[in-house]
Image (cartoon, rainbow over all chains, first blue to last red; front, side, top):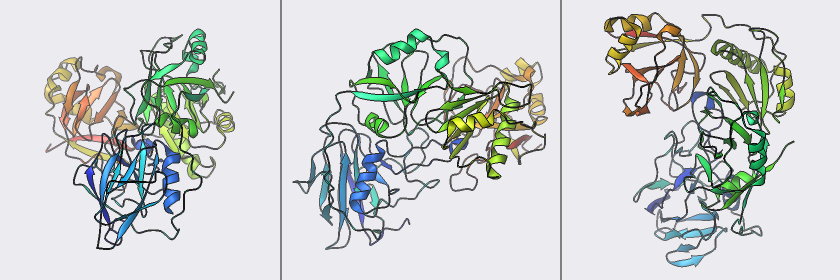
Length: 299
Length: 220
């Protein structure tokens, strides 16, 4: 699987602020201290792969705010087919605007420029056949917390393109461009340590919005400017296992929503869990300053 | 607020509590590190016997075991609190013997704390069969329990910004070996050339939970 298929690859011309390879991650290794990782906006990655006829676990590039630029490389007359999803952004091939959210053919030698996100944070640049770098523990995701997976692409990095699967490239299926989220609403299922916090704090958690902090990253969405959660009991919590979407409360009282690269165990109480799905996907696209509101779920 | 099931029946009898975590996980809580190790072994035994249904991740920790990626956490939590968990047999689990050079920068401090000569640190550590209680912090970093309480050193007042890979370190009830260079506040007593973590190896981690570990003085 690590060959270059028909001798096709993509050369990175401009890596962008933080561009990583991501697939659906490496669940099942948490007991060894290995984070799950994978695309933060899982639905956007799935859509890109669907458009290209790729298997759902195919790796694509995840960009952060300012896109990336790549050159298609291969024998004369060849080319690659790409699709850009996630955060809406201008897409150009050799300087000419092409469709966002649709399969686009790039002839060998041409440049693909994925521009700055118009809204949201993370765009997904998928290629038909996938980026065929060597998987680590079954995944091609780069894990920014523990450094597993392929290194961050730099200018000049050559990314091999894998062989296309049997499924055909599909047209865009009435794709809706997501509107910039005015507010991030996160359904929160209380527990396992909600009883560590004062009832008044918990009431405030539902009542008042926070803001997305600029300190947010692939490990967690940090919040600011909201009510600080106060503990009703003292003492230290011994380290315990954490799930994707866990909302941990460090001593400063401001909730952190753990995303794909979260550590496998943590020592601060988890007040509740945001279920994986549309809400966590939206968290991946929420820019610093966007209001965050927690709503009770799963009672 | 938090949905919990179960009540403690007596020491060593079973889990104290099982807490539902989100839509697809259960956090099972016990009282001690030894009970957590026994519970972890019991979860693995029941999973292998097909008694648990699908579970994506089983994550042991200091006093808990997390079962993540399960279908009906509420029902599973209720079932688990009824378990009787047998205590762990001393020889249960694979044994790794790890050669160590006792050359760490905190060796003298640790010897002073323990009120032993520096060269005796190796004897104290070498006489213990440790057990990997859980992993975290970095892939392949195991939290090893087994050091008697009178030998539990505090963390360093000032963490180091870079601890060399292969450092054998102690902090509180835990011992550990840094699989790669990283910041750290544990007391460094020695160095090993053992490869703690290699994702191309099966298993990738030398110190997987449940593994027993003996540190042997290199060249001794």
